[in-house]
Length: 400
Image 1 (spheres, helix red, strand yellow):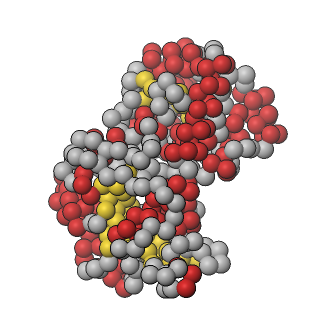
Image 2 (cartoon, one colour):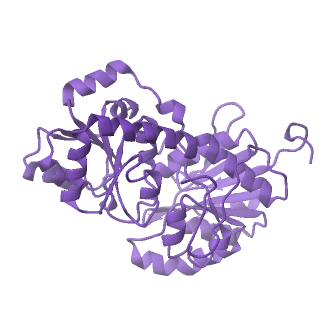
Image 3 (cartoon, helix red, strand yellow):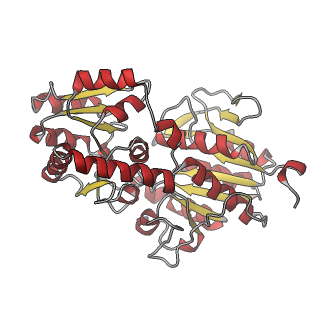
C-alpha cells in the first residue's frame, strides 16, 4: 500500500457508552484516543444519547464524527440503544473497536452481523453486579473469542482478570495515555489561591464518589494527619462521605469540592496525591497519571489490578494495603514530612508518565495494532506491542 496521503484512508468505528461532554475516565479516554486517531484514519464514534433521539455531532472541522443513538432505558448503568445494531451494521468501517464493560454493545455487534475486524478495549471486569456478570458472561466470552485483538491497559490486569485468563494470546498491552504537556503547568494565581486557602500541607484525591474508590478510608486516615484533604468529584456516596467528615470532626481539614472547572491548579497545589481504591473495579486509576504528569508523588493501594503498575511503590510514590487506615496515614505522614522524598518521587513520577504513559505512545501503539491486523506495515514509531507469553505473564515493551 502506498503512502496514506495518496490512498483511501482506513476507517474505524469506536463504540462506547458515552462521549464528552459526559464526564468520566472512559469518556475522556475515548475522546483523546479518537481525536488523535483521526490524524491517521477516518474515525466515527457511536455512543448513547441522553434522549430517545439520534443526534450526530462533528467535532471540529475534519474531526471525529460522533453519533449519539437514542436511549430507550438503562440497565445496570448500561444504556439500552436499539438503534446501535443498525449503526454497526451499516458502517463501512474496516475495524470495529468496542470499549468494554458494555455488554449491550457486544450484543448489538453480534446482531449486526458486521464482518470487519473486531478490536475490544477491555477496561475492567464486571465485578460488583454479580447477577449481571453471570448473566452476560457467555455473551462477553463469545465476543472476546471472536475479536482479533483485546487491548488491556496493564499486564497486571491481564493476569488477574477472570475473563481474560484463558485468552491471553489475544491480549495486547496498551496502557492508557495522558497528554503530558497539558498538565505540565497551571495558572499560578489559581495555584497560589488554593494553597493560601487550604495549605500549607495539601492531600488531593480525585474520582467518582463510589464504593470501590475507598474514600471513606482516606477520610478516616486524615484524623492522623496535620494537613488538609481536598476531594474532587461527585457520585452516589456524596452524602455518606459528608457524614463521615462530620462524625470524624474533620470539617476544617477535609473538603468535598464536587466538580471543579480545571483540575490542573489542584494537582499543582497539592503536596501528595492519593488513590485509596479498595476493589479491583479500579483497573487502572487514570487520575494517577494526571498527578504524575504534574510531578506529584502518588500513594495508591496494592490491588491485583493495574493500579500499582501505574505508580510504582518506592519509585514514584508508595503503595499500601487496600482499606488499611493506619498504613494510609503512615504513608501520608511520611511524604508530608519529607520534602526531599516528595521531590524525588514527584520527579520520577513525571518522567515515568512522559516516557511510558504519554498520549502519543498510546496512539502510536493503537495505530500500529490496527495496521498489523489489516496486514499493513506499521506506520508510526518503532514501539512494539506486547503480547503476553502465557496465561500468567505479560511483557510491555520497555515498561518496567
